[in-house]
Image (cartoon, rainbow over all chains, first blue to last red; front, side, top):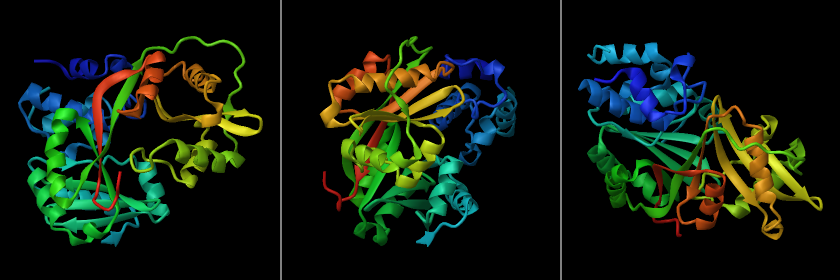
Length: 76
Length: 271
């Protein structure tokens, strides 16, 4: 199973996600990337993230993404 | 149909469509600042239906349609059953990987939508090339808004390429997002961009017809890359059939990144 950081790096290899506390403000993820990320997270953890959760606040940094995963039943 | 007065109305309307959705589908990814601007200018309307919410934004002489639906079947059912839509000139965009878009397009076809054009996204990663020398390029000034709008409207398809309104150009000038090149007192070319952190998007890159072949476009692009030397990701959308533009973008290191935009028009808009 991949880590969240590995998935982020696969989607946007040009960015250093570990150096950012706000992926959205830093321009690292746009709305289309969020949709791609949700598909990858769903597949990796065998879950289905709710449409209501696909909002920028949930993708701001590693902590918010991991919280989102836990909310949807995954153990990151 | 109601006129939207606050961003909260938008989020509530989206939530209604999302409630209980198992395969939520949408083409609405609003950036909050733009949403507020549309509302302030009285451009945004909503139609709430069973399991689907539709937003319409006034754009020149037509409307742009955005949808949020519980799934594609609900989208097809509700858009087909919405009588108000049939009398309007409407454009809508479907964005994603090409294979994923056909399903949504087929849901909109019974309501009279047909492919108007297709855009592809190009991306350029890594540092820009170093650029030297004084280039005849400067940021647009407050008084340039009208000339900028005229060049954009002459160079691009208003249905296919989401042209800015004058107030958006004025905001972009204030934010130093438009580079211009002038020759003989006329606006020869422009490059309109949006930068967020480490990512930057070219929205429009245009050279007036009489000033082509004078390397004006290259000067604008080089200056754009020069002032974005800390940016790590450059993107833009281009008409898939515009081979000339794509060739120029490739020259500056851009290449397709796999994302496509199907621009669909309703029956009242001809090609």
